[in-house]
Amino acid sequence: MTANADQALLPAGLQDLLPPAAAQEAGAVERLIQAFRGYGYDRVKPPLIEFEDALLAGAGAALAQQTFRLMDPVSQRMLGVRADMTTQVARIATSRLSRAPRPLRLCYGGQVLRVTGSQLRPERQFAQVGAELIGSESEHADAEALIMAVSGLNGIGAEGLTVDLNLPPLVAALAERLQLDAEVTQRLRQALDRKDAAAVAQLAGDHAPLFQGLLRAAGPAQDALDDLFALDLPERVQREADRLKRVVALVQAALPDLTLTVDPVEHRGFEYHRGVTFTIYARGVRGELGRGGRYTTDADGGPWEPATGFTLFMDSVLRALPEPAAPARVYVPHAHARTAARLRTDGWQAIAGLVPEDDPAAEARRLGCTHLLKNGDVQPLDDA
Image (cartoon, rainbow, N blue to C red; front, side, top):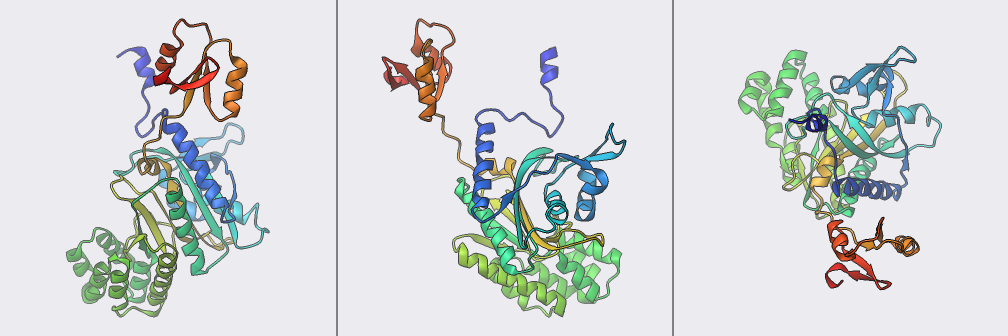
């Protein structure tokens, strides 16, 4: 292997994004942000690195194992590289924007870095785009976040979307009501995540029919809700189920063609969420396109507010988009700088020849152009 090849190697989970994917991602990010701004969400830009104690406070503690750490040579304090932007936006809302009118609507886009990837997403650095609605407990806020995420993805060309709705707090609330100890609750949650009915029956004991009923209450939204409401749920758990039902109704009214499923016991990936959550998929696309749901802006006893929102993962989103069309690129032979400038103003990608060439058409083809400036006119390269 040559020295140049050695230098081109990157750590596992990191990659160079090349043309045309880099331009496609940048364009998709900006179009999504503009779509969110249409709903009244203002853009914020948190830093890539923060003090570790601030970055991992409250809900951020759930991401501690995924956070790179380094020493700040200026302050001599530990810093963390963000693994997610949601908690940063929550910090901004409760500090810099604490006096802004509620509900507060914020959106963002940027890169994140994680210690490890996953089986479905081996990438450790990727772009996130998202939005947070802070200061409202209404189920209409939950529905707005989901509707806006799906509508934004549809707007950039993603098709075949499906959404799975969940209630991560349900199992813990039910276990508390039934006075199950912490170890049994943890093992039971893991068995439910694996959809292991035999393990669920063994761990739940006399309560096995209830928890197995929760396992069965998964699938197409209306069927799953019917199964869920057929169970004898404690009052607190019933309230969560009622909220889920109302959110489903609001989303179906706004997006009647969207495929909705419900899995009330799914918990993986929602460590800091405290209510209705959702995951967005696209048929035939590896990994989830995004996820979101209800949480609180601080879970450590400090100032807190109800919040909901979502994050879209642009590496997966790109896999759900059509292949980008080749840009209309015109080759402008040497010594026509003013014409090239005019063409750029008109929206062309105008590549100017840097030296005189004997065969401008051949040079245009070599550089991947679609058009050629010839005799003062822009002509398709095949006709030139």
